Amino acid sequence: MEKFRLMALPYADDALEPVISKETIGFHHGKHLLAYVNNLNGLLEGSPLEALPLQEIVLKSEGGMLNNAGQILNHELYFQQFAAPQENRRPVGRIAEAIARDFGSFETFKEEFQKKGATLFGSGWVWLSADKEGRLIITQETNAANPIQRGLKPLLTFDVWEHAYYLDYQNRRPDHLAALWQIVNWEVIENRYNQ
Image (tube, rainbow, N blue to C red; front, side, top):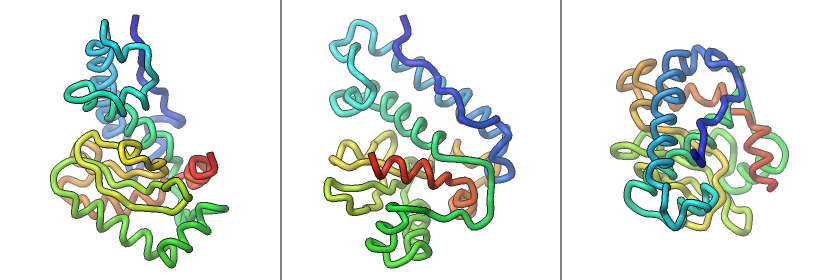
C-alpha cells in the first residue's frame, strides 16, 4: 500500500499565471513531485522508517530515501504557500513584525532573500525559517535539504531547481525570484510562524 500520495494543489493549475505557468505547474507538480512520491514509497517498503511521518523520515534517512523525502516535504511547503498573483503582497501580523525586527524592513528582507536564491550554486532552495526563539534566518539549502535538519522551523521557500522556472524564465533565475513575491500567500507564512 502506498504510504504517501501526491498532494492536491490548493488552487487551479493555471491560478498562478503569469508568474508560474500552467505548463510549469503540470511538470513541476504533476511529474517531478509525483516521481519523488513514487520513489519514496518504493524505497520505504520494508524499511525500518516505513511507519514514520514525512518530517521524521527527512530527519532520520540518508541517500536516496532522504533525497526523495526531502523533496516531497520541500515541494509541499512550496506549493501550499502560493495564491493568485496580486501586486504589492506584503506580510501581515507577527511575521511582518519579525521581518522588520530581524531585517530592518520588508524591502531589505526581499533583497537578501532574492540574492541568496540567485547565488545558490547548482540546485536547491532558499528558505526563511525561524529558530527556537522565533528569530528569522535565511538559509540556502542544496538539493533536497530542509531547514528542519538544522533545528529550524521552515516558513517560506523559493525553489531554485531549474525545473521550477526554466519553461517560463529560461536561465533568468533572478527574474523568476523577483516575480514570486506576487504569489506569496502571507497568511500561510503567518500561520506557519505562529504554530
